[in-house]
Image (cartoon, rainbow, N blue to C red; front, side, top):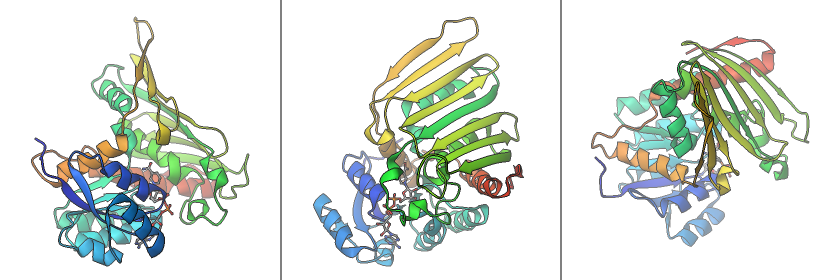
Length: 338
Ligand SMILES: NC(=O)c1ccc[n+]([C@@H]2O[C@H](COP(=O)([O-])OP(=O)(O)OC[C@H]3O[C@@H](n4cnc5c(N)ncnc54)[C@H](O)[C@@H]3O)[C@@H](O)[C@H]2O)c1
């Protein structure tokens, strides 16, 4: 049952994605940005004012404000763990952008702080809220395509080619394994949604087609404890491509983005069940980022609607991420510590 009131959040970090989220929240069904803040006071304040949102003078002021019930973290990756612990200590629910953390120890630390206070945790993996991906997941988990055998997925783009070379997103400490934390992580999350925790990964990242010294071309082969493989590709030096496909013992299903999700024109879904014709459906654009934030608010306000991504899967994703990074450095197959 969904609540009719609006859940009050503070948005932390008003860079590219924080601004996107503040704008989405304006049309939200059940969640409202009552405060926003950024270390960059001048730019942050100007943006907040342009959106009619009150600017908080600091992170601490935002998360301890009594009006605030939840916090949306849109800060660089390495800050997520400590910030989640601080937000949990302030007793506020958390929506954290991806990747949740950069390693298993940090996720466990953050989840402990959150769960001790019985707070809701949500993560910015909006691909799970895209209608054709939800439909594909339903087909996979209800057995329509039989036993899932293998996932192939690709998220490629060239948006980062315009970035200044000192941007934190191009830095090996903040963004290890080239495209991994920007785009590959969304696909790794989907693979965990299909197969559960990963068992081993082999990953290679190379600088092949751009000046991005942190690597522009990433390939991952992952295996899963319950069986199955995922082949994940993420590239930063080629025009946009987005594809998620799962092959099963009775059929397969594939979702293709028509355009980059930031300016989505929808999706095409193809599927083929043995003995039937190949089928195709076209999906209209849908604000999946907003659906994710609304799901967070529904869960945080109670009323029996759990957040649809279980914490075990959030943890499994970061455990697999840690092994991916390790494998790109060792050149070896790495076991995932779950
Ligand atoms: N879900 C998605 O599809 C998606 C898309 C883009 C980015 N992201 C994620 O959003 C997060 C932010 O990425 P971005 O591209 O917006 O980065 P960005 O550098 O554009 O913005 C980050 C902002 O955080 C601010 N900041 C840092 N520490 C702060 C603090 N302690 N208090 C207040 N503000 C602070 C910085 O000043 C900066 O303005 C990352 O985790 C990224 O992966 C998610």
